[in-house]
Image (cartoon, rainbow, N blue to C red):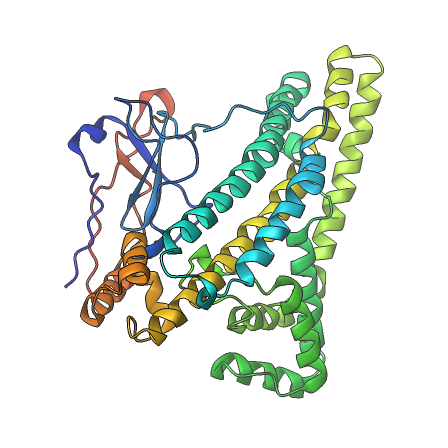
Length: 407
């Protein structure tokens, strides 16, 4: 029996509320990437803002579960969050993606590894923090402020409408879903093609239909840098397309009225109706007029959130994986690892040491870490550690502090 315990590293931290953060890296991270989150380090005497426990991220929250912001909302110099994303940060994301994808570990000179890895890490943090600090946090805060004022003007019972008026805009996540849907409908139309796709999904092989295989390759060229659960030791869809094939088969079985584009069209129709209502109200209500003026900035939420997730978070995570695998292949060449994927079960400091001095953890230690990692991922992490969240009327949610798994 393998016992997995979620215990805070210092009893002093029990006085705070620690909430499992499942947006960026919801699964347990392997040893190589178990690092503190982005943002400034704590002030002397202050507790950390984040902890990593069994590879899972926990953030120090307020009593109701709110995530503290590591950044003040920035001055974007007159640009909107979406403009800042498209014009400032997207080119830098693309440049970093190209750099990491094209990294060749064999070209790094002796004695240069620590500097190379530190520079790559600093650039990754800079770009990632810039995208989230200037674009994601800004659009999110403006959207929250809009919905709160919308409810003040039209009533708290209209909160769902306050969110709906921000929906129904093109975005990369929708584009990916539509592309998968179209491939799924093609599979639906042919029993022979369905059999070929099912066989490929089951065996992990290519699809035995040349025309469909070309269209699938085109999809993977654009969206294949997706990694399920956002862990670097898992393959991307380009490397292992089985998750994409499973989604295609699921869409093939769906009813005709379940298309992503149909759902998006319904969101557009509802949004436009709510916009018409707000414009009419603004004629005679100054508060509604102010709300209408703030609407365009709030409506950037969806494209910023979804485009950054697909283009920044997913692609940079994949590019980082490709970079680590290049290093892993070098470790194999030097006799420091048995396979390239072993690199993910080094700690970052062990990796630096291995590359500079040739000292590496043995295969037995790597195998044990793989088993431990599998145990971590087989449990559901407790949603809260330390002090419980405060519910209604002072009620507290129960806090689970230990999870046990038999393996």
